[in-house]
Image (tube, rainbow, N blue to C red; front, side):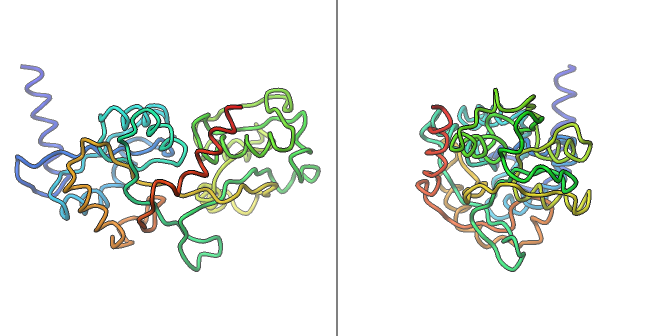
Length: 286
């Protein structure tokens, strides 16, 4: 009886949150990446609902948001088919495809150019400190300091900066006095402002958000090469007709539906667009 009541509550909740579709309509579980850490899943769900509802209306497949506790959790859910469609960062996408070769890119997200005059299909990662740290201007100036990464699976929050450090002969395990994995990009910039770390790794979208929140207090000491943008990937169990519809409609999505999420548009790119990420992943393992 208890399970019946819980199921009834869940169905009622879904029916009031998404556009009306036939009861036989397939459910498309959509993964939301853990860059939202620090915000409740309920908050992030609300930000994605306009986007997901539009896809539901356009395809007839009911898109239901599914959260991830970590990048590893998202990788496993996409590779196993617990989610059929997911927004995902470049490195987690590469790792999910290694686990299940049937996982494939649908579209690449577009993000604002640094001068905000256009859109681009790649972004930059940064190693940042505070402007008040006059003696920190290069990577070498960080010797013996406290450094903050995001997570080992993060593209701009670990993989790319670690590869750049290796190019300069830096082993983060011995170079820094202390290394912290802080779990999210906002946690890195927050820790900088709180002065619990001396420098940290993050990405363009978060640095822009942090400057809006804390003011112009950050100083970039190193930029990564362009990193292919976050993307939407699909599990092979997603019906092919739904996949084809999504690939056709997403490049034309109204931009106002994405005002609270990282993507500002989408473009079709081949899987080979992410080969540069695979190179970094392989280099980081050495």
